[in-house]
Amino acid sequence: MAARKRASKDSSAQTKPNDTTTRPKPQEPPLTDPPIAPPKSGVILKLTLFFSVPYFYLIFYHYKIEYELRKSILINAALSLAGFFVTVKMIPVASRYVLRRNLFGYDINKKGTPQGTVKVPESLGIVVGIVFLVLGILFQYFNFTADSNWLVEYNAALASICFMVLLGFVDDVLDIPWRVKLLLPSFAALPLLMAYAGHTTIIIPKPLIPYVGLEVLDLGWMYKLYMGLLAVFCTNSINIHAGLNGLEVGQTVIIASAILIHNIMQIGASADSEYKMAHAFSLYLVQPLLATSLALFSYNWYPSSAFVGDTYTYFAGMTMAVAGILGHFSETLLIFFVPQVLNFLLSLPQLAGIVPCPRHRLPKFDPGTGLLTGTNDGTLVNFFLRRFGRMTEKSLCIYLLVFQAIACCFCFVLRFFLAGWYK
Image (tube, rainbow, N blue to C red; front, side):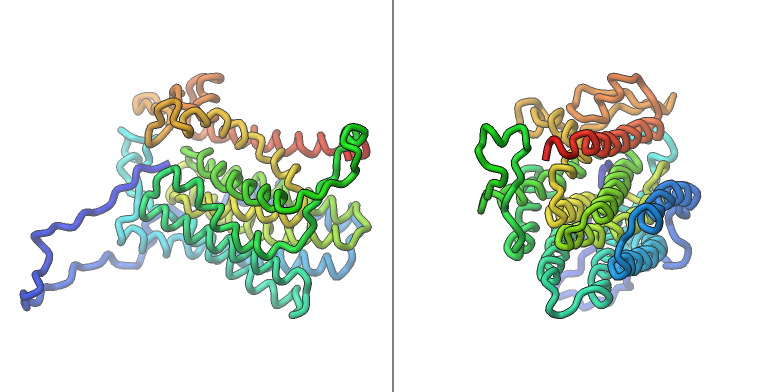
């Protein structure tokens, strides 16, 4: 989380309407060398190998996936890989322009050190969002026909994500109040809700069937309301579980990886073509999300040379919500989001105004030792510091990301033991 600084205009330097004196324009910074540190390629290479080996093993060897479906998955993966390299190249370019517009921040968790005085470009999640949308549009050429039943919902999903990218960037520029932020995803989800033509039923858990008397319950309009609320939660939960270098993007990378593995497992284990297409639809959205997020992570990991801004957190949350809704695994998605649910519950008293809520609910930084100390603010970041003691920002972020990975693994274990008994 960064305290953003904006340049104020000097009224004495403004030209009056009747002043015809020609004044030289201020010289703009040269666009030669990138103002930010190079990407941390070693970290990204390790993460990519750690995830891609089991992922492609499931695709090529463990499951017998139809040729055409596997072909579409690999085309989407190839486009995502291209998007990764484009994002890596575009972030330094975009950083120059946001710095020229005084859209930057100082790292509060490094205040009192030389790194705390460095201007870090803000809102670079806009690059990830734009590249993702371009990839999503190009992929239609390879996979969907004009009469495809999925094309309308696919474009509606892209429209919702695009709307959320726009609103996130507006928030970065205008600093929208928290109470308004909570409503933004509900507007962005409207294209998806209006175009949704899937089922509105839920399967009653087997232990509850004798009490309910039904195996399948049609919720009607209430199901769409649930979809909208899920989009609001996923978007804001990524946004408030933040404040450390790499935390916002890191949690997205882990959840997106879990979603991809879940989709492949469901595609490989099912014989229902409609069920397979729902999970393939989800996969087509999450592969580009993961690739572009890894590119941003290479700049945002500690020490961060680029801040993601609300643009990225809104974009990432909405994309994963859309993938879970149209892939019909919203319950599984919520278990992947267990750390975000805990963070929301801890934050609820402050978000509701019961307890005073400061502008930045960050831990205290000691420039002498370089350690963070937890405060009484209701966040998972501060809770970990109070529970495990003082530690560096990098160590704390690793602890939180490991906890995120454990939550995703717990979801897979839970599904394995409950399969056949719960539903």
